[in-house]
Amino acid sequence: MEDTNRSWYFVERPAGEPDADCFELRAADVPEPAEGELLVRVEYLSVDPYMRGRMRDSESYAEPWDVGDVLSGGVVGEVIESKSDQYDAGDLVTGEGTWAEYSVLDAGDVAPVDPEIADPPAYLGVLGMPGRTAYFGLLDVGDPNPGDTVVVSGAAGAVGSVVGQIAKLNGCRVVGFAGSDEKIRWLTDDLGFDAAVNYKATDDYGAALEEVAPGGVDVYYDNVGGPITDAVFTKLNLDARVAVCGQIAHYNAESVPTGPRKLPQLIAPRATVQGFLVGDYATRFEEASEQLAAWVASGEIDHRETVVEGLENAPDAFLGLFSGDNVGKQVVRVAE
Ligand SMILES: NC(=O)c1ccc[n+]([C@@H]2O[C@H](COP(=O)([O-])OP(=O)(O)OC[C@H]3O[C@@H](n4cnc5c(N)ncnc54)[C@H](OP(=O)(O)O)[C@@H]3O)[C@@H](O)[C@H]2O)c1
Image (cartoon, rainbow, N blue to C red; front, side):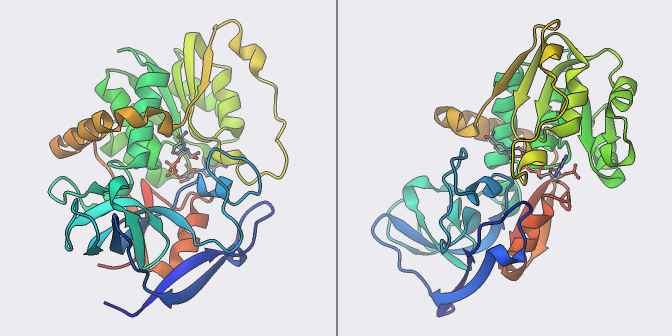
């Protein structure tokens, strides 16, 4: 084991789009686990859009980081030292850690990783928080019925790619919005989406949607907001459900963006628009994890991780979420 531990610190609050100045890599001693804790050698760490909210000095749904904090997030790694009887040195686990080479995790909050089911980075994506978000947001909030048309924005990302596949397993017609031809091919050729729109290749999202969803939209799973959502709101069917999962198109805005005002579009379809947080479903996480693991093991749900190599590139991996660098889940490989 190394003597020193490199970790990323949050050193500057961004105005608008974050950049490299927000982050600093520092070396310190490897931390000591206390009773009930595990020292974990981080193999993969997760970068997620919600972390942008943590960079603000104001309430978001996640607690803000203070300037000077070590950056935190989901990790997968090997237990090096255990001060808990739940796990032994050598076990592979996942939980909330830090952007670092070594991280101390609370043994009560970690879950085992089974590489027989999927490679470790999948535990930060389809078998982790994003997979559970897709599962509950679609099935509980979107409430899809067989034959429904389900539209997913951010469709080729960690959450969206799972949403579309669960919707297909529920007998729906599925349409995705994503930002490159490579992503569109993945959605339609590999994941079974019925159609997908490269929103970066058109200015007229309404016309594009009319072409791929001529019968209108019964469920809209919104990961992005902005003009894609404006277009979908004009095509909602009677009793449509809108699951508001994320609004990444707005996360770097300095004031509340005012676009076309679309609430009148909800009246005639009597549409229901509901925001939700995956944490609301904490008591049912086991149900989602078991079902997602079964779907992955049987091949009914496919998944992809975009792996950025090296802890030193973690900020770039995070910033890449806003330019759509990732196909599937964006993770950083810290160690083999
Ligand atoms: N409610 C909850 O509990 C919860 C939990 C997890 C995640 N979320 C939210 O769910 C959404 C997806 O999260 P994720 O982890 O799966 O991320 P992700 O989709 O894997 O990554 C973000 C993707 O957003 C797209 N994007 C970035 N800027 C955009 C813009 N201006 N307009 C349209 N698309 C844009 C990019 O893909 P393109 O190439 O397609 O642009 C990028 O790949 C995020 O908004 C996140 O905050 C919510």
